[in-house]
Amino acid sequence: MEGTVTASLFFIVFGGFLTFTAILNWRHRREEKINLLEAAILKVAGTEPLPLTRLDRILQTFHIIMASIFGPFLLFLGIAMMVDQLGIIP
Figure 1 (cartoon, rainbow, N blue to C red):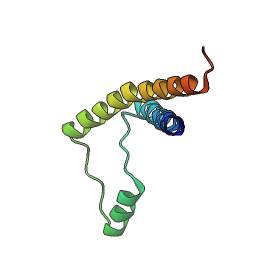
Figure 2 (figure 1 turned 90 degrees about the vertical axis):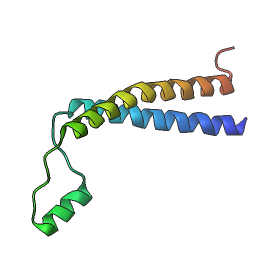
Figure 3 (figure 1 turned 180 degrees about the vertical axis):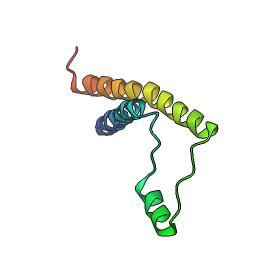
Figure 4 (figure 1 turned 30 degrees about the vertical axis):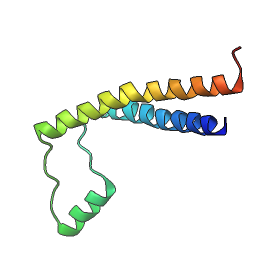
């Protein structure tokens, strides 16, 4: 029983994170962004970041689609497991 509650909490947190990531990335999908580590390295090197290639755009879109599918699914699964364990719905 306790393992199921832990798993459901994990699914809720991870599903919520994926859903949040999908929404955030969907809103800003046309912006070119780099992470902080890459920005620091480029600043030290004194160079500009390379432009995104077509493959980069395809993989970014794939990431958004997968997060949009699995995020709500895992969130729903975690909530359903929690409701089942707590016995809210008989």
